[in-house]
Image (cartoon, rainbow, N blue to C red; front, side, top):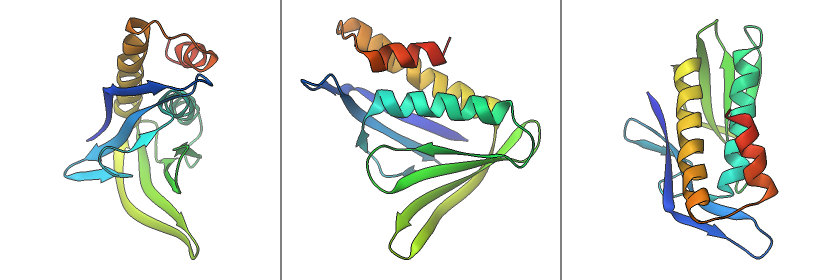
Length: 143
């Protein structure tokens, strides 16, 4: 089982209306890219919502990346069958690619986890009265 950890108390907005906050993946005792990873949380969640929807509606064997905006990290999902995807947790480096971990999970489970993290973040931004184009884009992808 994989979960997406977001910390609403870490959310910050800069003068260009870019929103950052803690977002990372947890599976078992492992964290990816690392515990307390801070990134452009709204953009990342928008990308992940798009990626899971593409995988959900694609043929077996299709791959889709779940990117982070900062750093050399990303997760590649490959559709195994109508219900399962294989995830590889990757780091780009000078030698090419390092696969840090891999696991299989259900498409519906990952989709639900991404949606829950997105809703949690959107609720906090609504409470702060933040309005940006990125927030509107994220809203479109979870309805």
